[in-house]
Length: 224
Image (cartoon, rainbow, N blue to C red):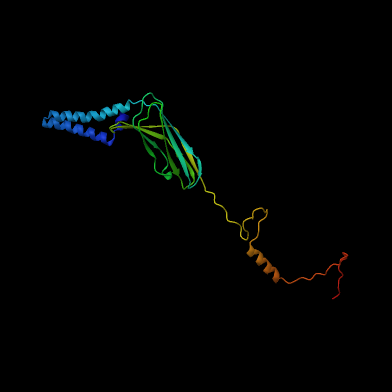
C-alpha cells in the first residue's frame, strides 16, 4: 500500500492537499458544507489508490529486435507485444521501454483497454552512430486509474542487446589500374600508364644483337 501511495500523480496529490485544506478551513469557519467538500476531495485519490493497488492484471510482454546486429549509423526495428492473459479486461496502460540515451529518446506508448485474451503490438526504431553493445530493457508497464490520480510501474525481466559494428567502406582501386573488364581474368592497365611506358622505352639506347642464321648456327664473333 505504501508503494501505491507513493504512486500518486501531481493531480492526486493536489486533490489530497486541497481536501485537507478545505477540512481545516471548515473547522475554522464553522462550515459543514465545506467539510463535506474536503472529505470528498480526500476520498477520491484514496479510492483510486485502492483500486489500482488491488488490480491483478496478468499481462505478458515480449520484445523482438530486427536485426540484432547492424552497422554503425543504421537503424534497427524493435517490436513490443503485450498479451492480456487474465480474465478481466485491462484499463489504460502506459508502455515504456528503457534504452540508452545514445540510441535516442525512450519510447512511450499509451494502450487503450485490452480485452480478455487480446494483444497489442507497437514498434519503434533505434539508431547508433557509435559501435558497441547496447542493452534494451527492461520493459516497463504503468497502470493508471481513469481519473489519473495514481499510477504504478511494473517491470518485466527480459533484456535484449543491440550490437553496432563498424561500417565497411570499399577500398579505392590500386594506382595505375582500372576496373577489370567483364569476361577477362586479369587487370587491365590504364591507357596513360601504357603511353608512359612506351615513351620511357623509346628513350633507352638501342642494343645491337647479331642475327642468328636460319640454320640455327651460333653467331661468329667479329674482331674489333
